[in-house]
Every structure is written in C-alpha cells, then in structure tokens.
Length: 267
Image (cartoon, rainbow, N blue to C red; front, side, top):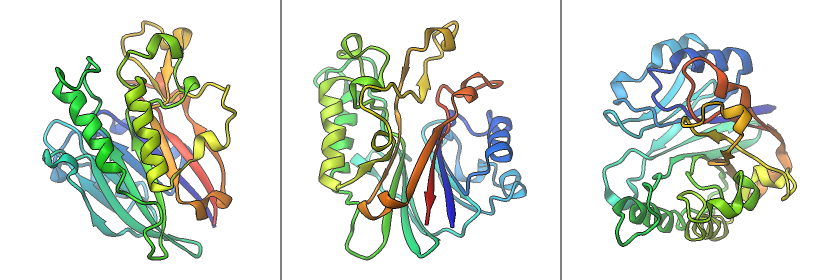
C-alpha cells in the first residue's frame, strides 16, 4: 500500500481549522500529526476532522499551550504519552498503526523552543530544551519487538548548515547553535534513527519548513529554517519514496509559521 504521513505545527488548531481542512481535502494524507494544538483534549475539533474522513484521533492537549495530536484514516492503538523532563507539558504522543505488512509505532513530538538566549545558565527555557534532548536519546528506533518506528514533529532545531538561510549568521541564534545541532544529531545516533528528508536531499541544497512571522514578505526574504522532521527506523528506509514540503501553505489565510511536511512510503 501507499502511505502518506504528514507533520505540521499548526500553532492553534481551533484558530487554523480552516487551513487544516483545506490541507486534508487537497492533499489527503493517511495520517496527520499536529503540534502546538493549544487546547485541552475535549476542545480538540475531532468532529469536523472525523467528517473529513479522519475517524481515528489521539490527542494530548493542554490549555493554551503546547499540545500534540494525531488524526488518521487508519486505526490507531496503544496511545500513550511521555512527560519528558517531568514538566507536565504535553509535548509527546505515540500510537501504533498497521500499513501493508508493517506494524508501525509513530511518535509525534513538540520539542521546547528554548527561548531567545542560548545560555542554559541564565535561560531556564534553553536548559529545558537541552535536558529534553538528553532524555530523547533513550528513545530507540528499533525497540526489539518487531515494530517499525517513525518519529515526526516540530523539533525546533535546524541541524544542518543548509537547514537555515545563513549558517554563519545563525550560529548564535536558538535553533541552530552548535550545542543544539550536536544534541539533535546525538539523538539520531543514539536511537539509530534516519533523517529521511536529508537522505533524499543533497547536503548543499536548502530545506526550510518554517518562516518567521516577523518578515514583512516571508517569500521574498526566504529566511527559513528546517525545524520540522521525519525520522524512521532502518527497515522503513527502503519503503520511503519521497517527501513534500508544502511551502505555499505559509501564504494561506491566517497561516501557521510552519508548513506541512509529507513523507510517502510504499509498504
């Protein structure tokens, strides 16, 4: 079977439900993972999503902040969440689904942004981010149970030189500092994950999934960063065919500053 799986930091799902609906109607992924839903579980717009064909919903929400959700055409089981750094934030949700002959464990993450100052001694938000990454190292792509793994989400780090508009100018800017990029690469290495977007893209090619609200003309400035990621266990790499970044969604009405990223698999 063909599997389309998308990830999108929606920056308030209730506010941006019209563009979520547009995306689902026009691009029809089998599964959509959302971050920063910014609502409690019982406030999540499950009914209109089910009316669009996404009958299976897993939500881990929080009033006004953070929050992650997975909506799917395929049945979801074994839903659980991990409270990284025991902060009480809703930044992770995991489910299991079946596609083709595979059972796949799907992790959806919203990694802390880290504030403005990249100093863990003076900025507790940055300390939280680094601690969160340290705990993520324990998450293995192959857990030895015969279940494949996919990890997606807004990881709030652009790890490669060409994941940002200017490597040199952003080296001291949160999301691209060496301690963060090294930390995220250590998570990939420790868990034996595969960064699918970079597997299919030359190292010298720019990749962006986020453009700041601060830019008067985001498209003309094109000062983007790749903050949204799709990783898998080794066994899913041969099934991965390509990915799409829906850049145009940044220009939709009342947009998120992130755009959807979709991975295509043949299973």
